[in-house]
Length: 405
Image (cartoon, rainbow, N blue to C red):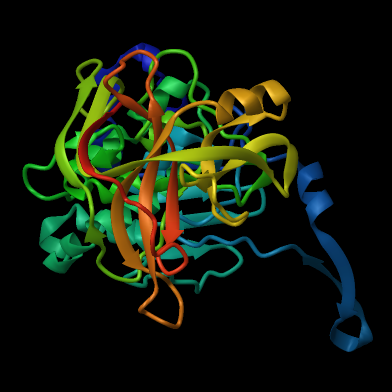
């Protein structure tokens, strides 16, 4: 049975137990295409008729037979693939789908079976997606120490970024559930001994894991929105946005420009991987003043979705853009307000640029502004990567210590 019936109002103690409940269940039964709890595993026949075509084909003894044809369902057992099915778009279901050892999925068109070793479906009973890179099966073995080689721990941070990217685009009725709905997975994640979980990120992966950005590939999420209501996460955490996010692709190990000085998140309740009430990171890195000019994107002229990054003398080129974490409706007042604020560029790391020439490099940074509540702290505005070859004389600024909340 699914966690749709469990909500934050039942307490963070309930959400902290979900890892043990799902991991130790015998079988999870999924009503994959049910719109809500009032619908069951089986869809009306009218739905099937609309999605099935019938053709006449030659039969025995000169006769004909009616053949029913329907689209093939993609059941890639991969936690960062785009799944079909209403249930798979729900945030609370994500950790059940990843943790349950066996799942029997009732979709609108067929049955599918998942376990630690294989995946089968009715249209392809021979289908076996048991590659070692298969992410769901890999995760189940990652948390089972005696059945998986130890070298997986060298890639755990990359796997976490894939998982978060997939989870961040799912639906939640309440914004404050963003961390509790992932807490079961976080509690079992094979991170290094002594590591600290910080509002959806891991301390040992900072500052590099701060370089997430709002994913604008889908028009449904072109507008960047902070999670509303009760405090959900600090601005440097992906959990602060109601949008799918991604991490920058890396060709090789980065050269760090920033050093993590301190980091803290205040947990709001008994679940150490659940909701937070406050948090900050303190970084020591080169920092310089910049000017930002908000612009709309080609896909929508109704919102300022990007900003052009300029040095203080306002020399810039149109393609030097960063994706804003939070967008604003297009208006002169909004533009004047955005452009008039003071902004800083905090350098984080340099990484190889993914081109044929490995000599090219990206310089990754955080764009910040002063935080209204705390005059000694900053708020994240965006992450930005600069072509080092294109801006060889960019002034990185002096090395300073900055607190981001």
